[in-house]
Each structure stands twice: as C-alpha cells, then as structure tokens.
Length: 352
Ligand code: A3P
Image (cartoon, rainbow, N blue to C red; front, side, top):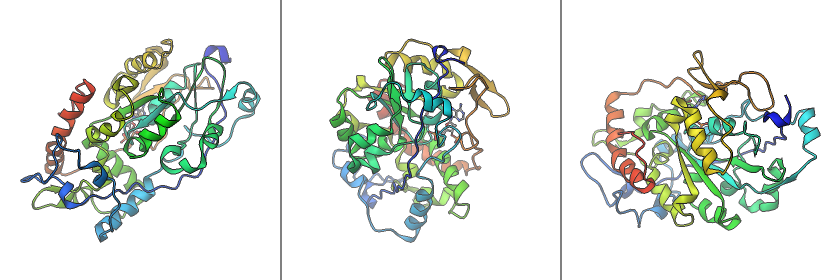
C-alpha cells in the first residue's frame, strides 16, 4: 500500500511518563445534595486556583492518589508502538519535524485514542503515537525537545499529538499559547458520569484492591456530598476547565468532539474534525466498519497496513455495575455544569 493512497507508516516514539494528577480541593469547593457551599457553575472566579491546589492526603485520598498514579498514563498498546518499522525508518528521512499545529488536549477516557487513530488515516496528518505530556510534565525540557518527539512532515501535512491531561492542567493553556497562538485545540468530551466510571474502570484494571466507585464518589455518603477532589469526578466538570482555555484561546480555535458520536457516527465526527483542521474530507464512512465482537467501530485498514484494525483491549472495557442511586446523584451533580458547558460551546451534547 503506497503513501499516495494515504496508508502511511511513520516514526513513533515513546517516552517514560511519570505523572500524578491528584489535585485536591478544600471542603468549600464541594457540592452536596442539600447544600452548595461557595461554588456554583456561575461563580467560579474564586475557585480555579483552589481546585488545582495540592493538599495533604487523608487515608482515602492516599488510596485515590495511589489508584490515580497507577493509571494516569494511558496504557501503551499496539496503537502506540515502540519502535519504527524498517519502512518507516526509510521514510523518516524525508521532511522535517515541526511543532504540532493541532493538539487533542482532552479529555481522558473521552475517546481520544480512537480520534487520533482515525485521523492518522488521513495522508495529511502525521501524529506522534504515544502521549508526549510536554505541557504538563516535561515543559522544562524545552520546545526543541518537544519538537524532536514529532514525526517528520512534508509541506502541507499537519503535525499532531494527543495528551488528554492537558485539558485539566492549569498551566497548559498559557504554555500552548506561548508556543503558538494559532494552535488548534480538539477536545473529545463524553458524558461525565460514564467518563468517571470509565476512568475508575481503568484504575481498577491495574489496582483491583482500590475502594469501590461508590465510596470514592462521596466525601460523605449520608449527606450526598460529592468528592470533587477525586480526579475521576473533577475531570468531568468540563465548563470549569474550559474557562481557563478561553482566557488564552478564542472558542473558534477549539473543536469539541462528541465521544458518543465518535462511536455512533465516526465518519460524521471525523468530517467535522477534518473541516476544522482545514483538511480535505478524505476519511469517510468507507473507512469504518462496526465490529460486533468489539462492540465499536473499527478501521477497515489501519494506517500503514491493509488489515482491519480495532483499538486494543484497554479501549472499550466492560464497566462494573454502579449503584443506580449513585449514578443518579452524579447526574444531578453534573447537570448545571453540563448546561453551562453547552452554553459556552454552543452545543448540547445531550447528556442530561
Ligand atoms: P471505555 O473503555 O470506558 O469504553 P481514551 O482513548 O480517551 O482513553 O478513551 C477510551 C474510550 O474510548 C473507551 O472507553 C471507549 O468507550 C471510547 N471509544 C470511542 N471509540 C472507540 C473505538 N472505536 N474503539 C474502542 N473504544 C472507543
């Protein structure tokens, strides 16, 4: 399969990725079923600095942080191979390495790997396979280090990367803007309740001894007070995180991809993404098939191959059953934040 056909091979790199995204917040940040103390979706101005503060760990926090530490990094899978193939080594000599013009900045468990893998089918997209984590963990290494991680591109090709933790990293918007104010930002968002359960499921797969989802969800189960300091919950408060980005980027430079539609209509979402990136609409429904065993759309031909390709087994896990009452309480918790997010983005994602 030749380059001209769009199924290309590329040089992929992987770096060790230590990380802990275990931001804690004081009690006054948290919202209970009977009270809302000092924080509503309409009054976050005083909140952001607090939300990302690190505070001393309680035994429960320690359990959470331990769990999060185990899963803060996307599992490396065949989607992010370690070493270049001989063919990719041959091609890697042409073109030059560029800083990314577009970044998938979030959200963790939103469907970010699926989006990147699908986009890589496009002949004008070159992307680094592993998550670089430059703007959250390795910023001190400098832009030259970052650029060196990127695959080589020819004129007209877009360089991309994805690191979902950028969306919830306070420093990331200013840092990305300092690299280039023109960077295009893509956020794959998913119902924050299922996202939280997916996040927990990933943690559980690595640490089967962690507390139950139900116990981690609440600061105090009897009052229904949600523990917004648990990153699985905190990441889903999309509107709050978005506020930080909008201080540095216009909304027109951000694209919000529906994680749900990426599954139900991957070609439709990819159409929007290609338009946003100024790419010819080359990825269409002809590229996808629904794999019944996997239960997800897969590529008829993966990049650099003529074979069908589904994402690895760490994508599309079976979630544990969660107490419906806890799910109901979480839906209630997220509702005002979702509404605010719909208002800010001008798009109703239909989670409520
Ligand atoms: P689950 O494993 O909870 O189902 P991310 O890549 O950002 O970590 O997101 C993982 C999620 O991508 C999976 O969460 C899955 O629901 C979703 N996803 C979207 N499209 C997919 C696809 N084609 N194949 C597998 N998973 C997909």
